[in-house]
Length: 255
Length: 229
Image (cartoon, rainbow over all chains, first blue to last red; front, side):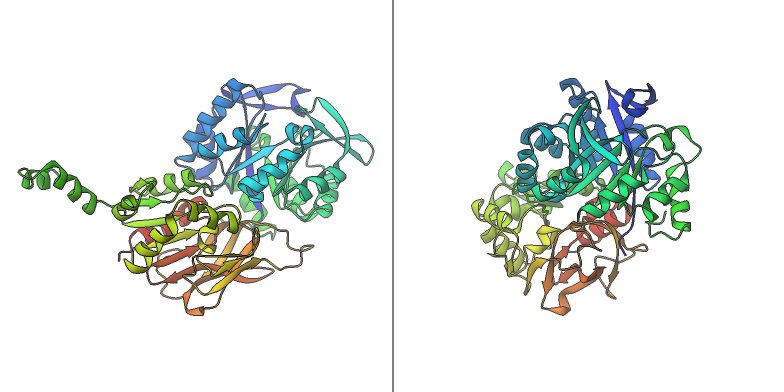
């Protein structure tokens, strides 16, 4: 039986790893060095790892490339890389140093053709479209780009359907309102997106307790659950979260 | 190696080079623009083997094992192998010379007689059967099939020897409908059963990404690298 995936996300900025709250609107904290943390997550049987360069500068990209190169030598799980990806060459460069999947966000909205070109060239399985969403009025979810700064006026459901048609292999769905708050995933958001598309949806933003993961899987039908704060700032590590999910009757890879 | 070099001290440099080539345990990983060559190289290196990315017929010849990784579309994969002139070399090394061969993900699918992805295309035709899109209820089972899934290996499988927790990482939308049932080494289930592994003499194939399946994945890769022709 296919397992639910538990995926830690690592946010990179200027050579360090950080953890913002609400995309930086409520500040951010330095949380260490990514290669060390990635190895710990690997030893705790993470199902995948996601690395996002949130500075999206050339300098940031080099750091992302070095991190992936280091991590891929001894972490044998799928690695996703993203942040500021704009061209087919950007994708190729990250795949060369050890990324297995690439996450595209702002550039996908600016140039949707990038999704179809990239998925044709590298396969759908390689292209994760990352979607950052804010609930702008009750029940209405709008897509934001440029690390949550730029409202696009695009509704999340129409965008997820479009990226699926263009060949995206997965969706990394992040709630800007919940990110870093540790108050739980936006269950309604995950549910409506999961139901709208045929490709897997990775829930992200808000996990703070072990029960939050279970809720996203059981109530909202996420294919995978991603988180970072909970692993940085709470007494839960990956092993404990996995055991909790498993003991809740969910099919997850045992430790 | 020093002893051997000493023994062959009086021979010409050319002969010593030849000796090194034939006695090496070099693993060829085929780069045809369709694979995660880096990831597979890392996994093979982690197991203590050296890797060669073959460019010429001799490079294939020097390798003890051949691995064909693969992500992307079947048609494109065959086209690229053809363009590089590798199909003929592979037929020679694997079918005539019986060199151990492992196809990963699409690299396994290319062993089929034909594949549908990117337009129906003839495959390497080493294993009878064809590659078709997973036909499942897409409301219930999302496509691609992404993630860790259980497999059931057959008894006495070579690849799955000493594997205690057979759960591996899959990413695919197509699957190999194998006609020769005796070649099926493991099955998995996603909506319905599909072939997860193939073993036929010196020919091996894995639908999942063993190079990305942590400890158990490295065990399977290690089992393949221990086979000999």
